[in-house]
Length: 343
Image (cartoon, rainbow, N blue to C red; front, side):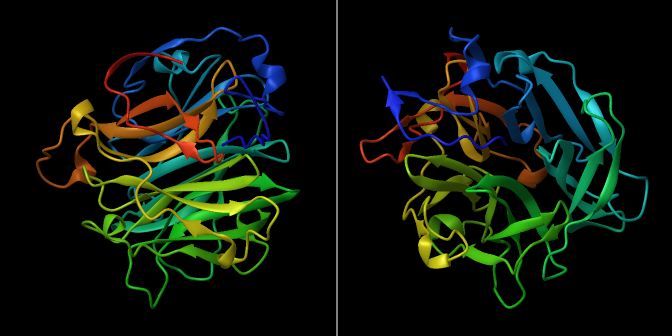
């Protein structure tokens, strides 16, 4: 995702540094229809430096990495979808393909993606794809390598961001000796596939709402606003119990110090039966044409699932703007109901 820092508000809207030149020509709002993109989970929408929004997500078949590009968020709904990479027929990376994210690092395009093996689809590790050209749609994509972490264990949902001149990687991983499915980790990034320091464990799922079905902290998404670094993440099983938690640190501290982070005691975004939206999670952040922050997430519009929720295809991509409280913390409100939404 593209990380934009902000320190002030004008009439409730963002004064956004990096995005403002791109957004000046998009002063009017737009109307989107939720779900924005059907049967696309774990979505990442990012406003890139060329003024295009990129969209990538998990597909129900878990077999490929896709990309859409459009000048507006609403335009992503009907934008052509390009397959950047398909899993091989067998061997390493021939299993489940999950939660890609596309990023530009030093002018080159990379995708972080979780992949299983042909003989064990749940042997999930994180890999990095790279593009040989400046255009991510027309360029040729290949596997650069596996992300190197301290343990050869279940690893997924990597995201990268720059803060105070340091590029960080944040990801979810199962750590030996800790009886959870995944915890969150942070480290500076030395190269796209290697860490620059020993990782810090940011959080372990222990609260009741984090351990429903599975003990999960995954899908980290950074938001740097109002003198703080907010890090949302997803918790519990991928059914209606799926929800967002949040970690918070001041933006002038050492982010590698676990003591710098505090965890919200309750979910910050969760199922809203009154809106018929169930299991909102695995989010990302972007900004709309007027510079306002936008929450991107997936959710279902029904509660009852037959079989394993992982294989129910109807986790749809949704978006909505959100506000900030007087103390500067984000207030995501309730998931928006299906239908037209002005942003």
